[in-house]
Amino acid sequence: MSDLRTTILELARARGPAKTICPSDAARAIGGDGWRDLMDDARETARDLARLGEVEITQRGDVLDPDAPWRGPIRIRIARADPGD
Image (tube, rainbow, N blue to C red; front, top):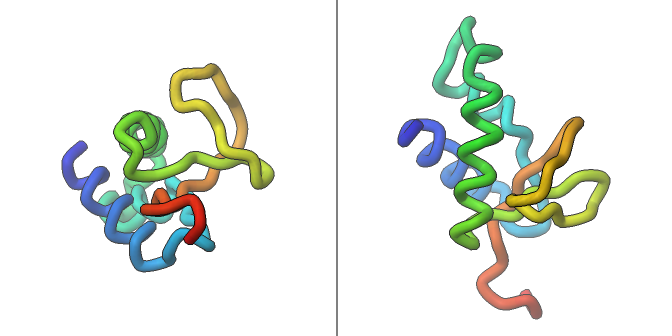
């Protein structure tokens, strides 16, 4: 999962705080043809990173609580250093 953590952070940083990535972007980057098998881990890794304040998880533009139950497609963006950014 450290590969997923590193990849999510690298991809999200490259996009910047105004844009998002999909968990599948990270899974595909490290999983090759077996990327689908990494999707649950990618989503859980995103939750962990959100709990640490490193990323935000969004759905339809709304920031999700990483500890709340949620379903459906999500997006990940790097957390802003300052809310005014």
